[in-house]
Each structure stands twice: as C-alpha cells, then as structure tokens.
Image (cartoon, rainbow, N blue to C red; front, side):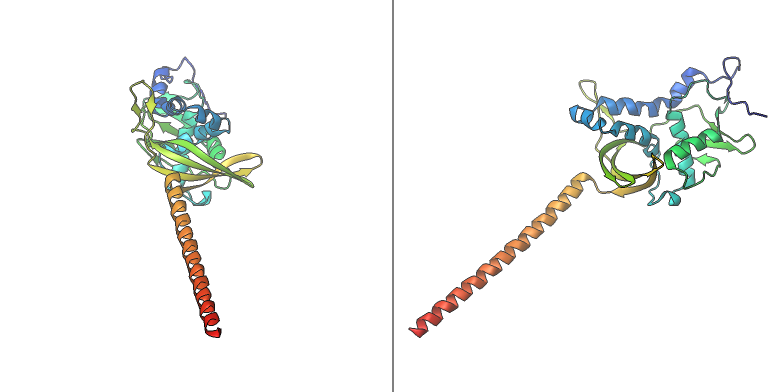
Length: 266
C-alpha cells in the first residue's frame, strides 16, 4: 500500500504558509544577504558558478560540521542534519508535507535523495534522531519520517566562496565562513558582511557527471597564506644576498692575493 505523502488543503493541520516562512526565514536570509553585499567583482565571480556553490554550501556551513578528509570519515548524524536543512532550503511547496502539532513530517526517502545529491553514494545514510544545531529532528522508524519543528534558527555561518581550483575529477573550493549573527546594516541600508571567522577547503568529487562533497578541511586565510609566502620569499632573498656577499668577499680576497703575488714578483 502506497504511503500517503501529501495532505493538501482539507487537512486541518495542513502546514500553514506563514509557519514555513518562519522556519526558513533565517536560512533564506542567506541568499538575500549574499546577493545584496556583492559588487561588480562578485558579479564576475558569479558567472564562474560561485553562486551555485554558495547555494549548495549554505546548509553545510549553517551547522559548522566537523571537518573530514574523506566522506567515509564524516559524522553520519551531521550528514543527515545537513541533508534535512538542504531539503528545507530547496524550493518545496508549503503543503508538500503533512503537518502535526510537533512540526512537519519529512519521509526518509526525501532525506536520502538530498543526501545523495550532497554526498554521493560512497556512504549509505543511517537514520536516527538528530540532536542538531538549534533543534532536534526526531526520527520515527515505524513511519520512516523525520519531524521538523516549526521554528527558525540563525545559521552559525553563511558561505562566501572566494576561490576555486579545478583538478582532474574534482573541484576544490576555498570558502570563507561568515558568522550568521554578525551581519550589520550600514548607513545606506545595505548589509555589511563580517570578517570571516575561518576558512574551509571543500573538495567536490566528480562521478557520472555530477559533483558531491567528499572532504571538508580547515585552511589558512588568504591573508595568512600571503603573509607566509612573503616571509618565505624574504628569507630566500636574504639567503641570496648573503650568498652574493660571500661571493663578493671571495672575489675581493682573490684579487688582493693576486695583487700581493704580483708585487712580490716585481
């Protein structure tokens, strides 16, 4: 018997539009803020696909997950939590899912479909109640559904993709993590982005023409990397200067020795 997936209009607990707007308000703000603070340079970057990367990574950095070098080493509960947030952030209709007094009911197969889009098929989703950021997603193994509370949260971070490196079968993104509660409104009314709290290197691996997240690693800020590079270059320059001075000294000593020999011969 097919499971009843949708309750439209007639159900007295049908999910009210206002409640889903409240639920998604915080994470929906991300797109508005990110698009609102960018200038001409950002428009150029968006043409490279940065906007799509940021959309994909919004539910990822929202909970500030633990880092991992390979998807097989990631925290499963965090992957499920990200998948649910990603599903909520997608273009779902307000009456897509059944609602109860505790929240909306999201079938596990929908979560799994979003899981595969984000993290591929190298790992298999394991379902359980998620005690996540700001709220719990309760899993009912009998009904095979997650209950999502009707409330909103402020994301821990919002993503700002600042660079990408294309490699064979993968793309490596450098992502600035902007604190979700640190945005400020300027005098002209525009939102002012905070200084990034940290930077991540997120690797997208390609399989069958699609990309999925295979690694999330900490990385130094571009400023730090530049400073380190400059310091290294300075050290190399000093070494070269020292070598030059040594050569000059040796040349001078040889010249003086030759002069003394010539004088003695005369």
